[in-house]
Length: 98
Length: 147
Image (cartoon, rainbow over all chains, first blue to last red):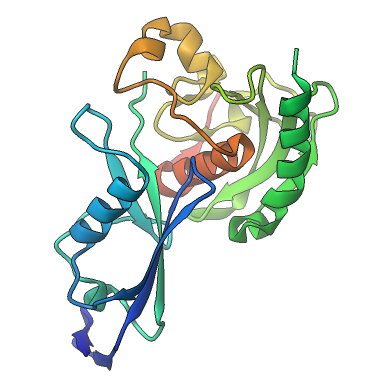
């Protein structure tokens, strides 16, 4: 499967490994066969479900990749990946300051 | 008073957190003044040379933690310049008013029963505290506190 980065470089990717760490949990969400066309919104939704979380009660969560919060969740894994085969995210609850 | 279970989990986590990828950026030591406490020298990826000494203490190990930043040289806990400026951190008040901290919950007792601001259920409190503080430093750091 081909994927294209922001810079326009096309990479051949069969399957990607996606890991999501929710920092309150010792478990990890792992998808060893993620497709490059999958959006980050989809990754986030599946990770929230895996950790038993939802945003309907008012709590909100962000995906963080390499120290940066993912703002555009319409981006696909293929657009994010460069040469690596594995993508590691953190799922972070957004706390409101007092 | 820390329970046997809390102490055992704390001891285990004190070893385990050293294996986190982020631990390469930390210098962690036990806070010998309390049963459940650590000191960790940390920095933001936005300012790698600006070092901060976080003191994290728990009364209830699975509840909000106390967070203070100490002067690196003197250990003073009353120095606003020892604090990083980040969302929720208040260097001049020497506290972090956030739903993860004991100080935040003391100021806002209503948070405990709030669906939005309640403290999350955590499997590994030390992992959570260190990673959450690191995340705040990396994403929200703007400057060093001033007197």
